[in-house]
Image (cartoon, rainbow over all chains, first blue to last red; front, side, top):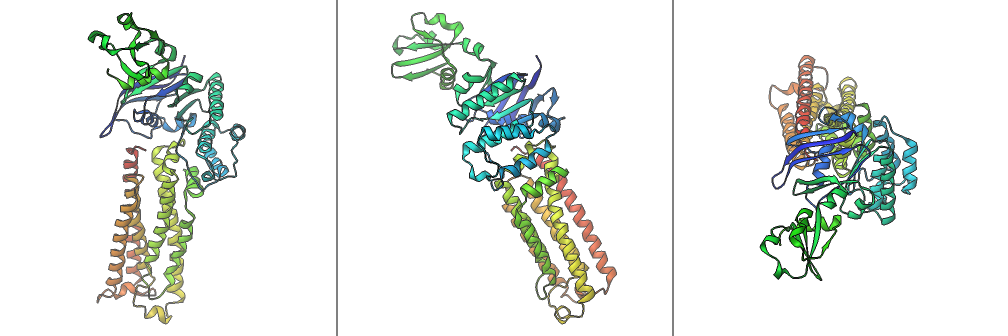
Length: 283
Length: 217
């Protein structure tokens, strides 16, 4: 299957943070969740994919074209939206749409009207009259109205009510069936369970994993630790992260290391518990 | 580029920018440092930069299917368009003063600068300073514009002060004629100013494109 996005050894250095050798790829028709805690480098990476952030080194290829060499053509065929940012607050939605559409050769008024109706957006309203959630919906409408082959969405579900979130995730699934690829960052892990088939997990600027969700989950096991006192140093060395809870504590270990914990109760971890444990680290 | 210009005028521009072009008519005021009119026009352009920043215009534009350097070029074309509209208005009014009103007492006995081709040249240099100091200063970060505008204001007031002083120095009275006397000298000053404006704007744009290309948004 054809890759619509390839990121190879992307590096970006700031004074107090750096992206280190970020590499991942997305196949056509795939929905990839991009996860990591705040400040892990998700937004920086997504911005680099749109040439909003200039990487120190590395290669970015979208739709089989180099970003540096084919920026205009790539942006014609890629949709980008982000939550939390609004443009032209004093302008009516219709005015923003009318200007935006002249830049896209594949702009589809019918599709635009469809999403405006679906999201209950009144195009005669000014942007500042919309709630934060409605602003996100408007940004998504713009990103979805020019038949993009790849959608890059930075926290698109932030600020949306549960019904709207569900509607959006359904849209993602429909688009994926049509061959559109989607990369979206989120903190809401249930969104990934709902529609993503692959995840890329970034931690402190480094990619920890980029694979199918099932394969990712199969790599880990959750161990219930009722009493820390009986844990040997050898066993502690296998812990990837430990979390306290009201019944004691739980430890995340690699599935391969399960044999070291025969006396303990084991559970299948979900994405959220893996993420929380990995971020907590030591014992 | 045509599409980007359409966006600059319809989405980005602050209405005050267009209203402030009216200050070009200060060309007609006697007994007033009329070069300040060019400064007010630039002040009007500043409002567009302020609006654009509040509206995340640079980010919006950079996400459109356009080359990153076209974002900068479009803003320069917008700025120079406003400047040229102002310059044309000011030129027409200057010619009216020089042709039809050169004998009017308030202009003949004007203690401050008269509208002539030297004035028009100085008018252009004020715009050149704006493009070189302010617009380039803005694109160094594509966000901050306070300091660039302060530095531009200081440079402009120094220039206005210098031009208002110069024609009072013996031997330089010719700079303040209100008719076509010494037209060769006046024309030379204007042509040199046009060159300064073109070069300053071009250099400013080139430097801005280079800076903007490396900016992280």
